[in-house]
Length: 179
Image (cartoon, rainbow, N blue to C red; front, top):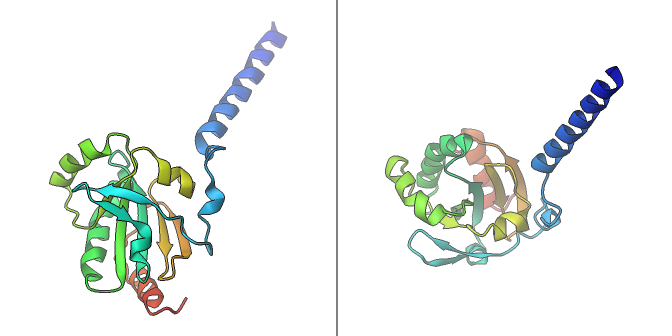
């Protein structure tokens, strides 16, 4: 009987370990090697809130903050006010913020979400998760800082206070071309 209990315990631990690994690592089909610091940012075209097509490469010559987020993600929601403050602070400079919503029903849920959470920066929809997979994103929020030449300078996982003085100075340094 002790042997049977021990065997059940081992199988349970193995199953739990497998499930944890499957749910906490990127999909084998996600080509995460494409989006690495020091490499060119993969280009994409996505629709914004108004249905207009937005292409990443159209922002060459600007520093881009590319943020992957979802309305169901508490740290994502928490960082939106600081993203809006950064967006307002950087208006008129060589900077753009693109927030990629990754929810399959994003075009339906984001407009209602924005009625209670003010954001005037561009929000794009990756409801098919094409760009998310191309960038190897599986944790939220996840942000890529892309320099004026289209090279990924930084990959940041987790929420931030985006209008923090240190972050603003870092972005301004990139805008000057001093990386």
